Amino acid sequence: MLGIFARTMAKDIWHKAKPCGHLVKPVAPTHIPGRYLSHQEGLPNLPVPPLQQTCERYLAALDPIVDKKELAHTQQLLAEFQRSGGVGERLQKALESRAHKTENWLSDWWLNTAYLDYRMPVAIHSSPGVVLPRLEFSDRQGQLRFAAKLIAGVLDFKTMIDNETLPVEYLGGKPLCMNQYYQVLSSCRIPGLKRDTVVNYSRSSSPPTHITVVHNCQFFVLDVYNSDGTPLTVDQLYMQLEKIWNSSLQNNEDPVGILTSNHRNTWGKAYNNLTKDKTNKGSVQDIQRSIFTVCLDAPMPHVSEELYHSQAAVQMLHGGGSHLNSSNRWFDKTLQFIIGEDGSCGVIYEHAPAEGPPIVSLIDHVVAYTKKPEIAGSPVVPFLPTPRKLHFNITPEIQKDIEDAKRNMNIMVQDVDVKVIVFSHFGKNVPKTHKMSPDAFIQMGLQLAYYRMYQRCCATYESASLRMFKLGRTDTIRSSSVDSANFVKCMDDPAKQSTEKVALLEKAVKAHRAYTDMAISGQAIDRHLLGLKLQAIEDLTSLPEVFTDTSYTVANHYKLSTSQVPAKTDCVMCFGPVVPDGYGVCYNPMAEHINFAVSAFNSCNETNTARLAQTLEGALLDMRSLLESTPKARL
Ligand code: COA
Image (tube, rainbow, N blue to C red; front, side, top):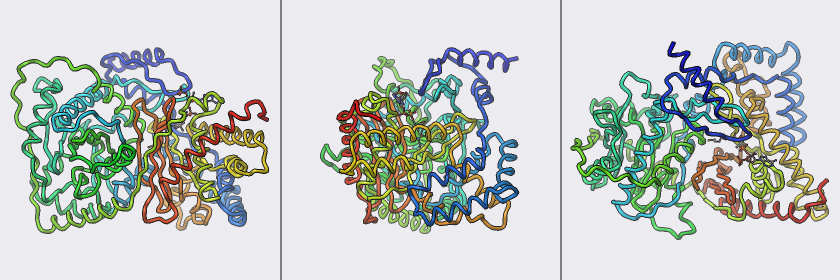
């Protein structure tokens, strides 16, 4: 009976929410048990695209990035692969049968392949950071006051999750899967020797009521609910944070947190060793079970105003090294909010449970919450027990693991370079004026910048949301296409007319937007190819050659790994490159400016973040000039 009621209520909310072409967040009422499940049940299942369609689109995607001989070879392989009664058909049938039997044929495979089986350190290689606007304080009081407000803001967001009143989001008029929101609080990744796991404690018989706070590399359990179930007030939180600060004045000599930054197999081994001890095991579990972690950081090294955002980006990505804040983290924790004494502020999140947009949506809520005028607190703040410090017994073996982890982290810190730029000349407004998709316009800017630097096109990854489907995560928009290649090759050719350049730009932008629509509706090629490959690994003795030839390797070597993570807050997400000789590029397009974070490895001679950022800026400006100087001459 209650279930039917909840479903009816839920339907009403859908009708009140007016779907339109972009992401919409309707206003939510108060408490609707069962709403989440009824919403999820209404979502479609992820389709398995037709085999022939994927093979054709795969060949088209290879065209700008592999040579003619290799392309012809792959064409032959694909013809054989998809022939009637061939291997492809067999694998396709098996995939379709998997799709019938599961809620989402891809989600478990993807979680394992993209995250839990990935053995590189999560720091830099997997976990994105978010740089938030600098705050106006430069002392401990300001730091703790802001931290208290931030914690209250996250708990406010959590109430919407607990009450199932989180507004449903829409993309292209369709409701999105909300599952990721239910995975980000009270969860943690746990290392294994070969594969990690990710555990969510929010649905356990006794869901956690504490967060963890780390200061000077020492962890504390902070209960954030009063005995009557109400969240602590900002004043109460401030008092508790002050107690934590005062009891961790010295830096911890044996910072266990740094262990979480290591290669996953190494950390898996060290984890088994660390948790043999009962006290250590209890302390680790307290961190894992906590709702989220707050890192009270030491100030970053001082840099000029111009370099501030880039400096803050690395602070969020890795903490600056073992001598700075890298040990003031538990990198396995899904959500860590970082607040520096110098007003720096941001987030690092472990990627396995969620993509950037839900994280950023939570951040938008929290940032708005922290800006609300404070309600005058009650003059008498009830007594609260001192937050509990987590203890670790450090054996010589653990000490060695810590030293090794510090060394490895410091090598990684030296190697990664992040450049954050605010492209202030225009934002989404200019492409919109020219009736172009802003995202596609930016992606074409990136294609042009890369071509200008390297005189060739490269495999380019842009994340596309699959959240229109139950438990959907992402697929790939391949931004390098025949059309983008035609545009970038023509753009700097003095023999070409501007009218032709404009026509090619328009065509490339349209093609990119069409690929986006195809991807978000579950018809892109990459997850399908991955599914066929994983099915082959399960079913066959050897891999079909389409998955071992040079084209496949080139197609999956993303020298440009990009993602749009839009936010209301004037912030930017950042992540490391996915290949040693590539770039990571994340951007937040605002109405009148665009925030970019570009990353690369210093050990690679070919890459240079400052140069790419500058070339990108030039490319976007040239594209605008082209459109503005040839308005009427379009073909
Ligand atoms: N003329 C005028 N306006 C246009 C237009 C055109 N031809 N095409 C699009 N627009 C408008 C849209 O209506 C939208 O308006 P809004 O600012 O009012 O919302 C705006 O321009 C943005 O649209 P567009 O730039 O085309 O991109 P998008 O918002 O549809 O986003 C993706 C595209 C690929 C980023 C999105 O579909 C997606 O999948 N996001 C998730 C990515 C992700 O998961 N990243 C994280 C990985 S960790």
